[in-house]
Length: 441
Ligand SMILES: C[S@@+](CC[C@H](N)C(=O)[O-])C[C@H]1O[C@@H](n2cnc3c(N)ncnc32)[C@H](O)[C@@H]1O
Image 1 (cartoon, rainbow, N blue to C red):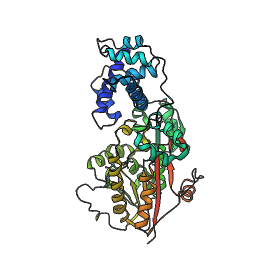
Image 2: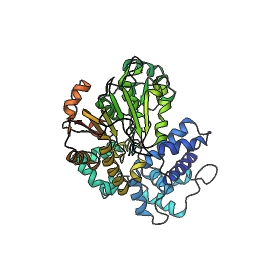
Image 3: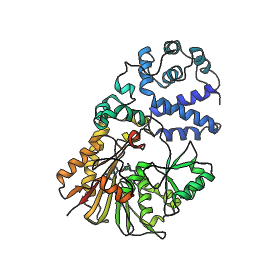
Image 4: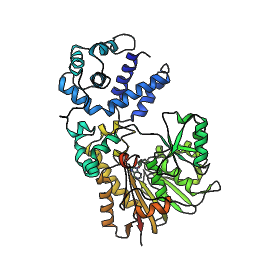
């Protein structure tokens, strides 16, 4: 593809992203499915431009709005601003890309030419930008983010705006980390052990992991180190009754299953629940690859009724709530999500979380544990939810992570405090929160 055609593809994908709530990853995949002529290098360059545009979006929009009131900010003017401010192209270079024929973008309008000229020689960052713009986060979230990160706000938001590495979790039912690393290396995929999770490998560089033997054979599964830690801190063992209450497509169910497997069989009962039957079904191919017979996992769709009598009240040793949340901790992977999030979304998630905590807690047996996790960094979804729950459920108490970590992971705990806050800048992971509660009676 010509450089102009790549720019046009990035503009088209960005337009599609504005019209949907689908993830950028899915939109890009669908776009290329219909354009088989695009080679691997074209796809990578186009995807990078789309993602980088999302990561620089607030600053690009600020510049465009300063220069143009009409047509104002749109995917085309944003790309023109990016070419000028980030790539340092002159107005002539930019006009050369907007050739107006073949697959290239149409010719620059007079206003767009004015934008390219006005931005020549400017730098992307400007000291007069408000915090939300400079830090690439919605302005309405700056106060809650400051509340979460305190004086680390700038470091954390910068780290949340970077591209995440790809981590994989080794399926211990199929082999250990050394073996997985060797097999990945044979496919030219170098990796390093993750610093916190004893089951993780961090891939070096960009690879199509789906083609790798270790992935196809179920020895590794893609999972960020923070998610691996959530599953590890659930501390499941063979013989237990375990409920993954918001199992989705089974990312954590697989990890729990692998910890409960003894000589090829899940020992005990593992329940995977969710309100979405479609998501629960998506678990199938992953289970197959991991070598876990689907019938060994009891799946329960909670959509129609909240009838959990099948599981039985007060029976579970462990109930994991990987709660629906704003996803503010995973902006590294889905930067589009931050620009779609609204205060109403946050309020809706808060009330889901409260309802789920109450429902799921009824399944825990006395002496058992309730593990609450979110991939959000907002205190309202994390510490505040736990505080609220404990006030109304005096028979639950926090088991401090600082004590559990060395017991479960046989390593010193990297954080202080009873509740776990993982963040990209402090722990080099996605932003995750984990609270482990014990039911006393
Ligand atoms: C963070 S995702 C779970 C991700 C999954 N555990 C994983 O590791 O891949 C949250 C899940 O909660 C589910 N959910 C939403 N409301 C729920 C409810 N009231 N009860 C149970 N699950 C719910 C959503 O369908 C979604 O799959």
